[in-house]
Image 1 (cartoon, rainbow, N blue to C red):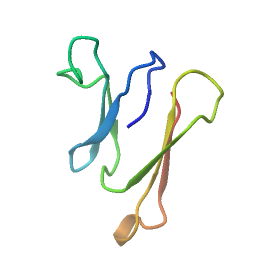
Image 2: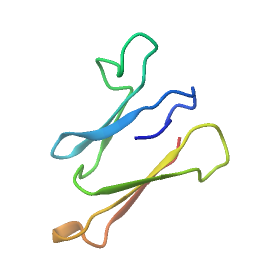
Image 3: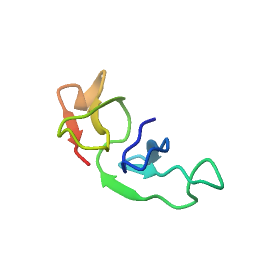
Length: 79
């Protein structure tokens, strides 16, 4: 959970397929958009942390993976 598009609403990022991380935006009339705002081609399993890396209104995502083939992989998504 985080505000990834910087509009002040809570957005959600989660794995929609094995290798796709999707971001769904918060909407005024409903909790989340019905279609993803952004898709990222990457292993979607892992632990996500939100932070603000570039000092704008949108939060960024850092993805860690606790084990397996991607244990040393870290993905950073800057919005």
